[in-house]
Length: 288
Image 1 (cartoon, rainbow, N blue to C red):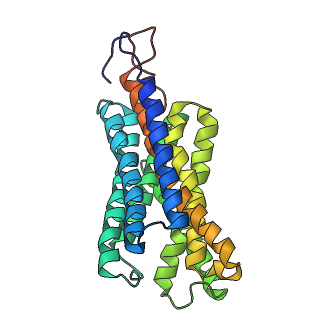
Image 2: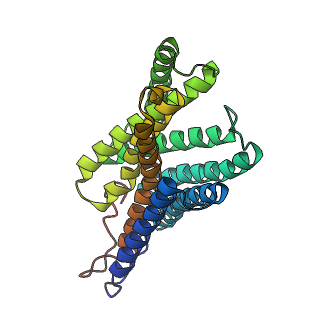
Image 3: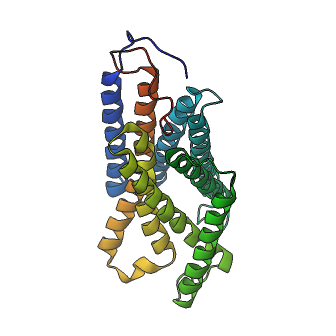
């Protein structure tokens, strides 16, 4: 990591501005979603545009943060893999524009978007795996075997839940694999969310735990979304459904924003160390 001089001040006003801008954008999103003040097509385009902007805002500063570390420094691998996952999700959001234009009456059951989500989840899991190895100082030569065991467990858990969902009548009218994949997402969200909470506890209120917080928001948002996709919200009144839709999509967008702000603050912490010394920030700390 490049050593920086103590005379470089942290750009705290810029961070405040970033938070204010993010809050304003989220407020615009909620307003457009709730009240639909514009023609429907334009309104939807702006909503999806905000989501895409938030996704790019999450991936870009993560790339800059990872670049602050030398190739020999373990945190670089963690942040590069984690950020790669976000770029796959950016691609998924971009593909969403294409598919919505091509299929205005509804998206196909399976698209390349699903591939982007799946690869993204696998990369998030791999980044979490390496992060925990850094924290607990795992020096064993097991390589990725434990990671693949976790992936296998996730697939088996998804299989069991898919079987239960099909027997309960959820996902009726959809193929088995489509149902399996739609269950796979919230399972990944749940596991990633638990891991993110664990990291937050380990890091306390430290900046290095914050980039993972966005996964918690996605865990809640996607659970609502997939439950609806499987037909679970049909038992609720329309007003309740609308509130849950708004909550789900707002949390989804907020997840990106949380990651963006966390990456940005971490990048500035590395690039502009606190005054009082010229040493870079905690080279040997987990993903720091």
